Length: 618
Image 1 (cartoon, helix red, strand yellow):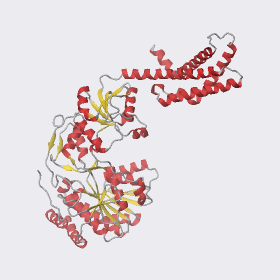
Image 2: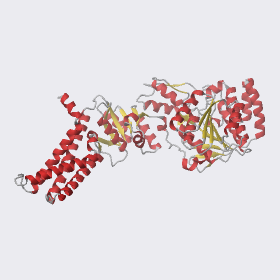
Image 3: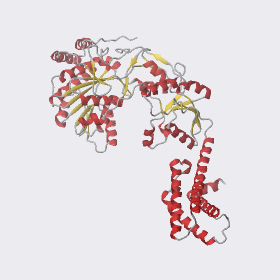
Image 4: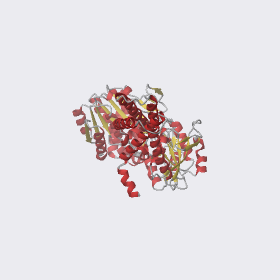
């Protein structure tokens, strides 16, 4: 029987066609008989058989363009059934016209009954087939699979359930749905009941024996998303997320292939800042752009976003050949006709930089190259000074000399009241940019933001690796807090700031509320389906040299004013003696090259009065 069934499957289209043809003829026969109040064809045999022949010709002719036999009816949706009805109506209309041309008068009642009955039988035939497949799949779902609670009763959830019931080997068993829309509670989607609001998730998970939570809400604010994920975290169950349904539709892939773990971005109660290309992107068009540190996380994202804005050329400069190669290959894959140059060079090498500036006719510089790792720069302060400060000074000097349009310095919140060498070096960079901004025709600007999720040196990838390895997760201090933003929105800020810069500003992003690192670690553990301090230990290692419990975005002396771009502000420039700064930098250069760390620190404290070096370890 199995072999016979497999052989029949090869002729599925033909068998379906024969069934449709048979149902069509049955419909006509019954309609013809009912119209004449007799199931006997005596005396009407010729008319009936000629009509049947014409009917079948019309059926074959009209049904073929609709390609109904190309469809997989086990996955049929409303649109597919709609096409069946359209095909049936069209066939009946053509049949009516043809019989009139042959002067065969069957009567209005026969035509109407044939249309209604054929529509009904062909529709029911496919519906029964479809429902049978759905029921078979539901019954065959792995009873040993994970019991799943779905958050959200919208289009995404409907798509999820469809895919589950299509699959014979799914590892998930949908048990119930929760949603905050009170009008939906008590109703069902694909037979799965909406049992309550998101506030009841912990109680429902206990009552239903849930193993995994699937978050499938698309149109939701960042604040609500964090609230719901915080509730989910209380269950200590694994939580997974489905991206926006529109992304799934354009990705042309299985929904389950797109399910991902909860990321830190999901836990930030702040809407992402996005670069408005139409409003702010014109200054990039047909310009030659130099991105220093272009192989890094921030520099690479800058290159990717700039590439979408039709620049004349992108020049990637980086000392790391691997990073530069990776961004080169990615840009060439995404933009076939991009004008791209890669230069492996150090920003410390003034002669090399001058050669590039002299030959390439650069319009704009985005300066992302820097040593950023706080503990490592504490151990190597000379390198922080030589690379961050004097590398920046080289670029600033050349940008002024070659009359570039704009120079954008990537800065950090660690430059505010710095307690470490890295932060102090970045504050000096801001001062160099501000000083040159008041003297040069080039628009010099600094952009300051907090920690960037997923960037090189970020704590988040470390947490993920530690959780994956079974712990422990290491946090420096239970009270330490940080501001966070994603790489794309950090770059959006940089690009927006550059568009509205007039020279000398420090731009700052409204980054929302700071996040306690301990809470972040605990939530990441919980949302991975584990229990903090039980399944995964959290160890407090003490503040590292130069590290602060909290970061700031503004100096005490700096005021703040709004810009025309939402959530982007300008810190009021602090007055300082530019000539004295250059004199102090001359001395700092000599000290850095001699390796006198004690004198180097004293000079940095002299240049940056609010630099209070914290070398203690708690």
